Amino acid sequence: MRRHIAPLEPENAPDKSRELLDGIISRHGSVGDMVATMAHSPALLQGYLDLSRAMKRVKLPRRVSEKVSLAAQGWIGCQTCMAAHVAAARAAGLSDTDIAMAREATATDEREAALLTFAVRVLAEPASITADDVDELRAHGWTDRTIADVVGLVSLNLLTGAFNLVSGITPETATT
Image (cartoon, rainbow, N blue to C red; front, side, top):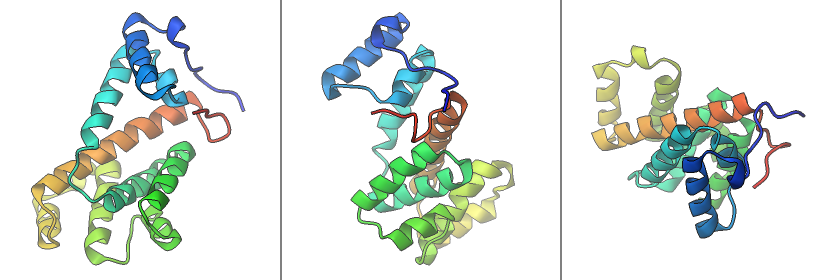
């Protein structure tokens, strides 16, 4: 399968991207395929790295944040992101049933099911969300911080999923 946009080696990247890639390599030893491809745009790469770091500070339990990501990627259709989030969900202790349900934006827990439905609506039809919808989430015990965090997680998933799809990054073409 042919890639639409090729990843860049640091030495071939724009100066700011090279600096960012070198920093990642010095800390982690390598960069992933998506990050190397994002290096074409220093602004995009910086924005992704900043948003990704920020979303690691959400107050949602990891199991719930992975369910949100699975629900979002189920709608977006990025198989590379889905594979990564399935692996992360398993590492967080989710069962195959939990993962399958989250991919369909639902859960056995009514509170979580409401949050996953909301997450997909943020992605697919944000203009339809009303104050009553937010009040319903609050009635399930979700805080305004959680609601805001879900918008951030959905945004990050849209960024990574859309970028991978546009770039032609698939599980078959991705390298780590």
